[in-house]
Image 1 (cartoon, rainbow, N blue to C red):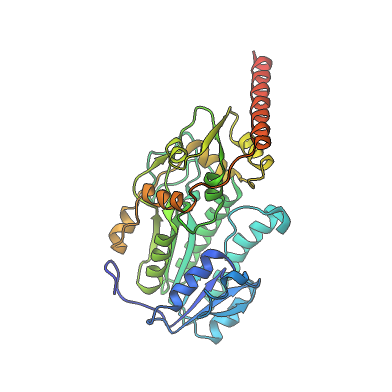
Image 2: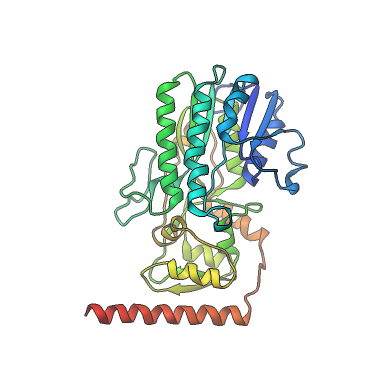
Amino acid sequence: MTPGGTSGAPGVVVVTGVGRYLGAHVAARLAADPRIDRVIGVDPATPNPELDDLLSGVERVRLDLDSLSGLLVDLDVDAVVHLALVTAPDPQQGGRSAMKEQNVIGTMQLLAACQRAPRLRKLVVRSSTAAYGVSFRDPAVFTEETEPREVPRGGFGRDILDIEGYVRGFRRRRPDVTATVLRFAPFIGSTADTTLTRYFAQPVVPTVFGRDPRLQFVHFDDALEVLHRSVAEEHAGTYNVAGPGVLSLSQAIRRAGRVAVPVLEPGLSGAAAIARSMGFGRYGLDQVDLFVHGRVVDTTRLEREYGFTPRSTAAAFDDFIRAHHGGAVVTRNQLATAEQLVLEGIRQVRAAVRERS
C-alpha cells in the first residue's frame, strides 16, 4: 500500500476513453497492478494502432457511454475511471456541438449508468483547473473551495463546470460510492502531446504584448500516478493536481529556446490566427485566456491526502524541453507571414484607438 491512503483496490475497473493517449496509459497501468483483477477499456472508436501493444492487457469494448449501464451491471464493475473528455473542438469531428455532446451529455449518461450499478463503489473523474476560469479579479492562488469569479469563456471550461455539477448530484444520490474529482493543470512532459506542448514546440511562439502570465503544469507521469492511486486507494473529494511552483510565460519560452512574437491586445485571438497561418494548429478560448491571465492552484490537499508531491512545474517543463530539443525550424516564409500579421494587428489597434478618440 502507498502512503497517503487506505488500501481499496477494486476487482473490476472500467476506463472510458481508452482510444486516446491518456485513457490508454491509465488502463495499461491499472492492468499491470496485480491487485486489480480486470481492466475493461471502453471507447466508441477503435484505438489508434500505435496503442495496441500498450493495451495488450486490457479488455477492449467498443461502446458509447449511453450503452454503458448493462456492462457495469453484467460484469459487476467495482470502479469507473472517466477520462473520455474532449479538450478542444475539432471542426472535422463536429466542432463545439460534438464536443459538448461528448463531454456533458456523455458524462450525464455515464453517471446515470453508474447510479444503476449496485456493485459500484468507486468513481474517478478527470476534471481540469479550467473550472476556475480566468479573470482580472482572480486570486493569486486557487484552492479547491474557490468559486470562479466569472464563467469561463471557453467551451471546455464551461463543460467542466457542468460535469462537476453532475458529479455533485451523483454524490448525493450514491453516498456509498467514493467519488474522486481530479482538477489537472495542463499536462506536459517528454511524452505528452497536447495543444499546450505543441504551442511551446513551435519555433515562433505567439504571446500578448504586455502580458506575462504565471503558469503551472503537471508532468504526464505524475498525472498517471495520481489517477492510479485514486483507483487503488480511497480518496474521496476534489483535488487540484499540479506541479509545485510556477513559470512565467516568458521564462517558459526562454527555457524552450523559442522566439516570442508579441501581439497587441485585444488579445491572443490574433496570435491564434498567426499560429493557424503558420500551420501550428488551433487554440480555443480556454488556452487564449490562460496565455493572457495565467492560473495557479494550491496542491496542499493532494499532497496531504495522497502522500505524494508531483515534480515541480519547472522540472516537468524541463523534461518536455529535453524531449523536444531542437524542434522545428521556422521557415523564412512562415516568419514573414507572422511579421505581416503582427503589423496588421498593430494597424487595427491603432485604427480602433483613433475611432474612440
